[in-house]
Amino acid sequence: MSMTLYHALQLNARRHPQRTAIRFREDALSYAELLARAERAMCALAALGLAPGEKVPMLSHNHADMLVAYFALTGIGAVPAPLNYRLADEDLHHGIGAAHARFVLLGSGFAERARALADPAWRWIWFADAERKAPADALRWRTLLAGATGAVPQGRDANTVMLHTSGTTGRPKGALRSRFGFEERAIEQGFGTDDRTLCVLPICLGAGCVYTLLPLYLGASIRLHEHFDAGAVIEAIESERIESTMLLPVMLQAMVEHPRFAGADLSSLRVIQSGAGALSGALKRTLLARFGDGVLNIYAASSEVGPYANLKGAEVRRHLDGNCVGRPFFGVELKLLGDDGAEVAPGEVGEICCRSESQYDEYFEDPELTASTRRGDFLTVGDLGRLDADGLLHFVGRKRDIIKSGGINIHASEIEEALQQHPDVAEAHCVGLPDERWTELLCAVIVPRAGRQPGADDIAAFAAARLASYKKPRRVVFMAEVPRNLTGRVLKTRLVEQVLGLAATGPEATS
Image 1: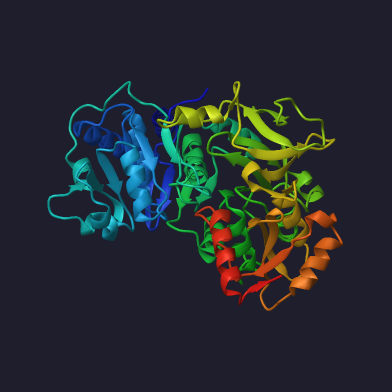
Image 2: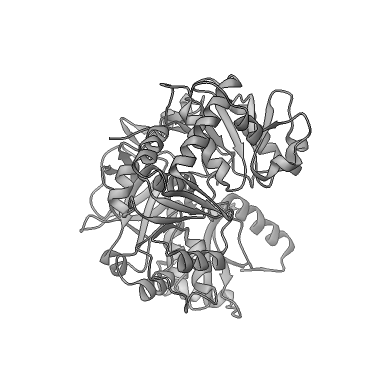
């Protein structure tokens, strides 16, 4: 019974008009107030001449106004196109231009960048905290809403959002999505209509957008944080009796390392959903010891394919090591294909291909790239996995994350999982370096645990005892931290550049 966001908001405002929809900072919006504000915004945006299908980039940190804009834009059939605020000005300018934007919502934290990004082809709509710094002749969000008149536009609502991919390789791509599988996520992952849900992921990105809109679609109440802060998350869970949340692995790690984690009352949590990266065995053990079975879910997804597997319940405890991502997601048909296009046998590695009601529509104005993700009516983004005898999917890596050394394909994730077991290793990341003899030389990048400093020979010996000889790293590099994108995923292209820079200078590189 998939509904548009606007229709869901209408129904929730009728069912629970006084229920709090959004808490942000010290303010709260009930569902009745959220609907009224969204409808005023619909009138204001329609008066500006925004047309159905028109893309409207949004540049802001998390803010309640940003969610009002999501409902209002989709309510008039326009397309929110949130931008990753960590991108460089050049990439932001490219993203706005590629959307053929006439209007851009400029919000919390970005007033100072308006001049650098300005372009005569579009106009800023200043909203959230940016309004206070807007020039005198600017379009201001609250002024537009206060002056909105006329009937609320009807019959134009749609559900399309343009989500930009994470950009681990090259510039982010605009993925148009009109289906999000909200009902399927609620069934599979345990989010409820009466939940108090904590939302701290950046809502300019796919996971943050979906897992912030999901509870509002269901009629639940959300506590929205502008940024992730481990202490603030622990405080909110304890003081507001939070029942569900979506947290990335890097966020969960920061939480368990926080001094307040052990003593805080976090007993209200029913659902911790995680994904967008692997959780270490040590982190899983810590979370299970704190929350028991049934709270932690670990899922796999992409902006294009949507969610395709979920590990939950007691199966999390049975798969502490490695990167098991669970059974195929509710409503998802999944198969693994080899390079010849045929399904691989159980236990063999293949390309993860899915068919569901939550996959993307297309890459905006890029039919060739869109076609590259299609396998008939199945979709893939190049993720690799294998199915075990119990039907659980194990994430192996990505096609672009295969290191071709000496004519043999090596999955980086397998080496990383082995090295992660070393007691002195906090993180292990494997990359291929250009090499005349091997084509790519297998290099392990190690982030040591605090106060520890393993040696390169020790790491190599640890790997040799657990892996085939051809999988032993031929170079070991130690770094204090590795480059990541906004969701915490490692940017391996930049990591290779940094390693090559170290190889040229030598101080931290060890063979």
